Length: 266
Length: 266
Image (cartoon, rainbow over all chains, first blue to last red; front, side, top):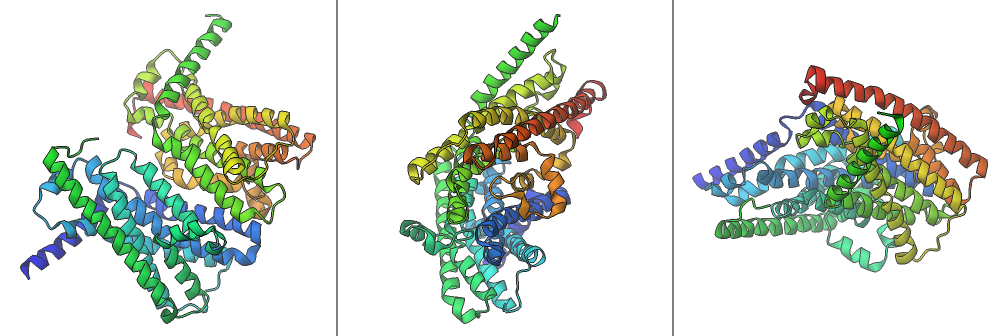
């Protein structure tokens, strides 16, 4: 029981401190520029291309897709920087030297970014309502909230994996940006998945976000939680798969780095 | 020193800065992302979204996506051309050297923009060879002229944003968001007529807008010669304005570095 309490404490302390470490020295303007202004301009760009191509009636499709991409922004960039940042800031030896439970420590790095991602998605949907008059009148708010939570969790799972890769590469931003843009194509945020070649649809089946975006579109169109539950279970499963893969790599890197004395080798 | 000697000395500085920047940035994976990965992904998405809607859409997408690569590289590489010197601790020595700082930055920007022209080449190859769509440039000579003017205009724009970023870090915080703002206001992949009327003056004062308009008109053959020449005139006019304004900003930078010694305290 004592051990469980200690692990929970490590989880939340790690979550809070890594988040503070990431944003502490920044001003509110940086937070606003990164998590509000940037995603808004990206959404506008893709919604405008989409409405140029297919008319303003299709705005809802692009608004929802790009609002959900905000989950990926926090999940991938935020989580990766929280984990990869340990190496850049020279705190990795202390982390690996501490006796703290690794699972709590590792998963805790994603916690604040999941909340951040949810805030980003809700902000994106708000912009959609304000600027493109997206209609949410048929939406079940609790089902939507659960969908956003699960989608943000699954992208954070991918972020945990990317964060581990950030521990062994110098080009973490290249990897992050590529993964983020790949998600833009394969998740169905901006393209109808059914119109893509079969091999692309198969790839999108194994990525986070795909089912989250589809579920959100269904819920906003008026469907209930029961209709989207199978998709959400799969989305959660994919997030868990990536998080566990990331954790396995994290432990393996720790073991190898300690054994070979290559901790923080760039 | 005679005017001719001064010109030769400045050209030598530009060439040396060009060479060093080329060597350095080709080892940066983020540059590869900006000139290869991102434009091709944007091209793919734009192709899929615009395929049934826009006449001559393939060459329109090549130019538009290539322009996104050009601007992304200018924004991040060019925008950090002076700030990067601060990060590496070479800004003060550089500002106190007899070689004019503006010439050094011009050489760096020339290297960045020359590299980023590859994004158009990659998009052309991707759409032509991999997607198998026929591509032809309607007015090759006017297109070549537009490219040359675009390079010069982008250097002037880089001088402006590079100096603004170092003088006011609050502006630089919006660097990520500015990427898509210029995509939108410059009409890289959709006409600015889709935007509200109040935003049109913002497009008109941006050289990327006139560059995109000239390149689209010359490549697709949708504009007549007069329209392209008018765009060239606007590019030249705005380039002169940017250069004059950047000259003033560089004077402020040098004053802060040499007299106030406060440049590193922004």
